[in-house]
Amino acid sequence: MNPGELVSDYRARLAEERAEADERRRVALLDLSSMANAPAERIRAWERTHKLTLPRAASHPVLTSIAAATHLTLEQVQEEQRRRLLPVSSILPSG
Image 1 (cartoon, rainbow, N blue to C red):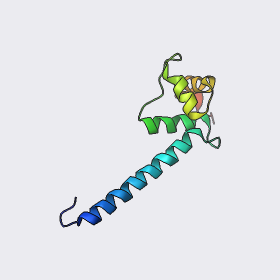
Image 2: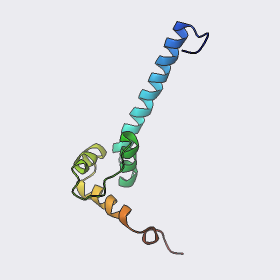
Image 3: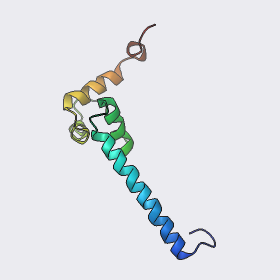
Image 4: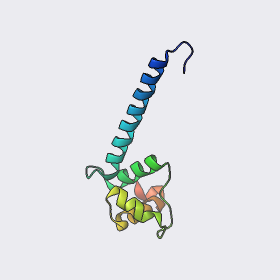
């Protein structure tokens, strides 16, 4: 509570903050599986939501969970792993 804040105002503020957090989470979960997002974007949304990074090991057990949550195939998740392991110079277009 803030100094001088009424209990009713405090409760209303908390409810509003909770509703905003719920909305942010709902949108984040939609980003995880939105077909409008490329696989890399969906995986980044998963990383943000769970505050984790995509494991480097191709056989890591969490990859199947990432694939399910993002509505991607395991092969698509592993392809993103491989892409991330490439040197930056091989990913950037030359020009």
